[in-house]
Length: 158
Image (cartoon, rainbow, N blue to C red; front, side, top):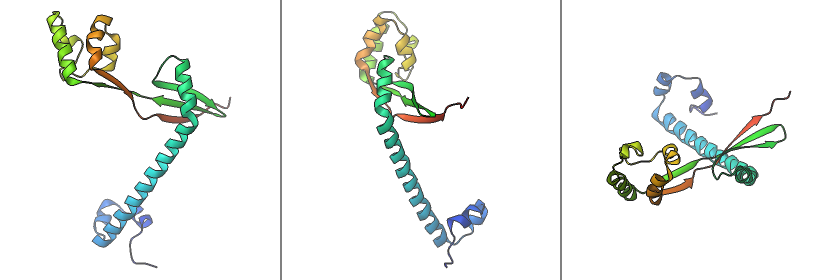
């Protein structure tokens, strides 16, 4: 048996009570919480990797079948529907954007109709632009994907 405060005891305290603990107890509790966080991150990463190993291929095939490289698709697996999301992350080269904006200005267009004042291009605007405008900005654009995510949703029993 030990005299130190446990995490179970800490759960029963409020912040004022925990603040009155001896500093060595606080240090040990912080160490334990840090270890728990690291373990939780490891387990979350392991589960993410296992979901990707199981559903990444079928999700990519479903996206191809729908004619898209990114986005959300649904995959049936027994009593669950897996929602596999691969977000799109567009990156814009700032100097090339500045040149594209200058070209729009030279055409007599208002760049504010197409880009934000920070010279970032919202993806929804870019996809809605006419081809002539998109062609000017395309050299400044790079598209990458984000980290895939998966949600398991139980299907209705009925």
